[in-house]
Length: 98
Image (cartoon, rainbow, N blue to C red; front, side, top):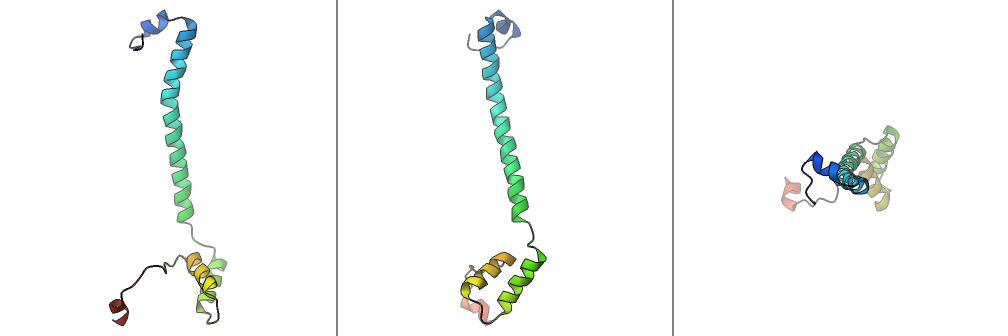
């Protein structure tokens, strides 16, 4: 009896087999539900972290570093990352000359 379509089939089983059948069916349905719930929670927190604005004092510090003429390239890179400027996108020379 591998296919249990009827409650009467479950009732005919011994208590240990009935318990095993119930546990296996529960595991089959609950574990995917838990995985989907965890994935949705992680997605929510990743979205919130990615769309969070930097604090005002950090943004002001980053702008002052970018305006400074004697800032190191590492500091400029940090400042552009803190503000969210994408500086790794290549631009063709024609678009700069316009």
